[in-house]
Image (cartoon, rainbow, N blue to C red; front, side, top):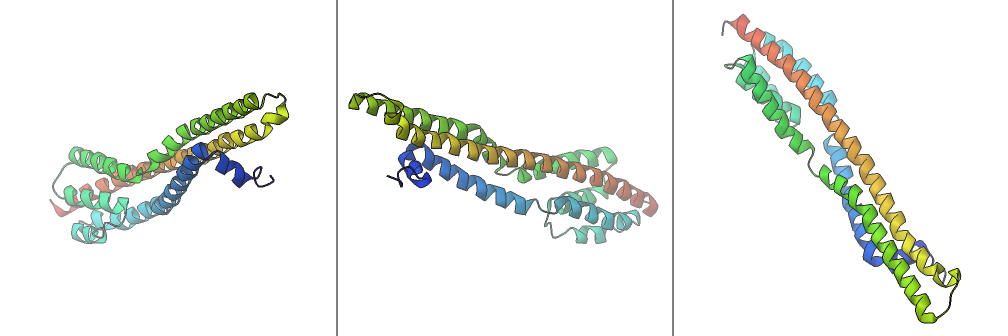
Length: 213
């Protein structure tokens, strides 16, 4: 009896809602850890890379700057490499268009899988509520079959049903928190990329003028 009223026992009783929620929680945790790893240190590396490239570009050393970003290891490397390559022949307006396009592409990559967190945060409470409603219906059905009244008759069924709502809310809270965190972080990364891309464009155009290109 004690096992039936334990957390694991109640989760097993409400398997039709709790098992999908457990699966969703595992997926969300995997995405959270993957995105934390993928987004680590990007803003600091973006500023550091731009600071190293700007003196080279002002001196017109485009080849050295291109070699420094050739590895294409991060979003900033890819954006800067494209801009430096284009800055040798294109004007400021064209470079700004390229910057917008490349940052949009990188933004899509940075947002990869994040939509799953939003979906989980929106759907998990409803899955939990579904499990609770079904569990309460089963509890009252059992009471009707037994032909007796009283809260004690349905207490076990209600406690098993409510675990679905609790689990759904827990999954949703975690998913929403990290979805908002990643959304803000990606916006900040995009802003840092934009600011430093402007600095690179200015430096590259200065280097072209100094070199007579």
